[in-house]
Image (cartoon, rainbow, N blue to C red; front, side, top):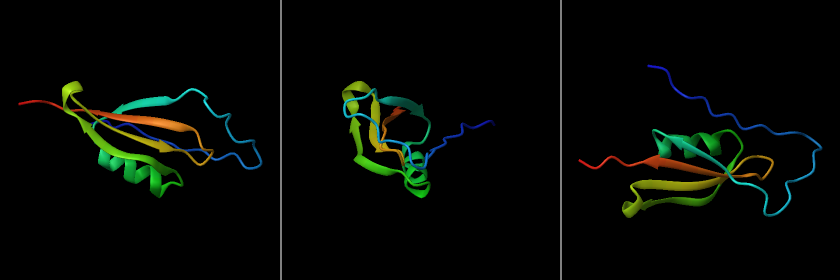
Length: 79
């Protein structure tokens, strides 16, 4: 089974992003694992994971080492 790769880059001596820039978003199979990987690779959690059952998702927000905002979504399957 093939998996996705999530890469956080840090550009030394580059200016920080402009406030209000575009948010990058990803849909992932396991939100908890991805959020742990963000922190392990130099990013940080900006908003913890929360469930939004009426939309069938779990969502968290993180920032990469350059402070870009990333929305990470896991679709929730209802049995």
